[in-house]
Length: 240
Image (cartoon, rainbow, N blue to C red):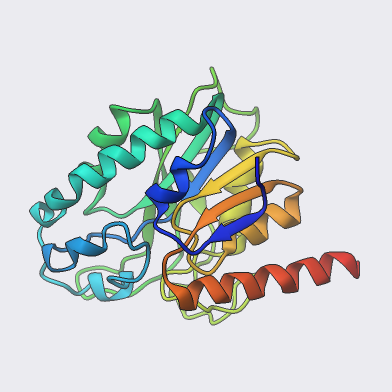
């Protein structure tokens, strides 16, 4: 099986080429709260709507319904490619959680909701200082000592232009956060999948922790940024 690549293709197309039960772990950050006006981009990773824009939008919960066939197929593919002891983290926010939960829980064993406390954030009706991740695994329990489901890790939205690296994507997650997800739920040498790779943070975290990665990113600009970050990380590791 081909490893350590990010294909510039639609994620369902990319998943179709992955063999059954070949992935150890999924960490992925889809575009939040897609509206019907952007429904054609449900498979278009991060290109249709920026999460920072969505914070101030008038979109409603029902706008997501048009994306249901895509997400049902996506979660079915996750179930197919994950190993019998595989795990996953699927990012969302307070608006999308109620939509995604029944869809993903129908295909995969959801175990908890991770609350990522970003410490600060934008917002006029109390600050948007947290995001969520749906966590699940086929394992009987998580590793001992991994802690609670509330993680306090500084995010870019707290005003930082760099957090374990420069901010190069509007909805970029800090490397520390993605690294924790990878190290808590996979072993060195494992295969980590990210179907919405964005600027490549999951790939960078895999390289730094000794995991393999497979990713898809349809936006050509972000795909190029991800490839650049990967090359820089490889150079950094070779020079250590």
